[in-house]
Image 1 (tube, rainbow, N blue to C red):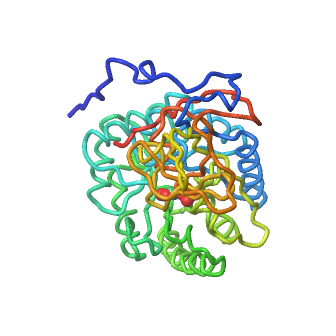
Image 2 (cartoon, rainbow, N blue to C red):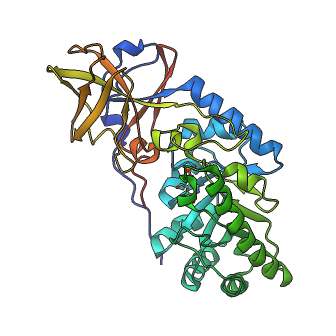
Length: 384
Ligand SMILES: Cc1ncc(COP(=O)(O)O)c(C=O)c1O
């Protein structure tokens, strides 16, 4: 059955103005806006990629953090072998932009999605994850019908308790199930990512979590390779653990996403040894719209900042965030804080970069106090 992808009749981007143009002074950017500090982003990208390459493995950054073609292109130019996406519709945006090596780090279920993946595989190198025979059947049928090759990685649950099989025998069952689709489904190896390990504050705890995962994965890889099923790729790891996977003598690539932007949640991690220090590159810019003796009100709230990992941090000495509502943030003035006036601009650091970016149409790329470029959040809302 053919499921044509529905094309919107109008480009959404054409309807929405950006809050600045290149050359605008930072002070004149309309708000709320999402700022991307290019110097900080370039520092994060260069230092993390260099460390991963020095460890002799590949970096495949997760594009779900930024959803930006412009950032993905820079990641590839800075040595990334490709990118990760989480959904087929997200991958479509990047393939259309010429990024032709994408791992969908997720299970792809349903005829529409499998058809989309098969079509992408006619234009690009596409990998997907499986943890159930039904997913193998669905993606196998779509790949066969479209006469394309899709790389399949078996997802292993290394403690996150989300997707993934846990035993060598389940991995063998899944890998063998690819054989009827040989030529269309290609066994690539293992995907193993533990989100909860990324945010363990104590480096020793993170290290222990990765060591435990590596021991589990080594058994599974040995069982697969014992049957002639070569695990060319073992991939996983995020901003909190990528150096540990890189030093594991098992992982062949890592998938950090947030590293390029950073947020307050990651900044609360204690750094491991000589892991590069990351700089905040992502900021919300708001305007003070109302002032009172003990507090001020900003013009961006829950529609500008995700709060699932806590409140954003205000970058104005002595001021703290009290609460957010749809279009407002209330900030409190500490005893020593200088007053804010109506019209002042205030920077905020988001607590969780991925869902914050997905709230915005534009990234305002700034260098120093000047807007250099305006980048669309190209894959914003690509959720299916
Ligand atoms: C499968 C997978 N890989 C990589 C990442 C990137 O993680 P981070 O943004 O913490 O670096 C994520 C994020 O949740 C993920 O789900």
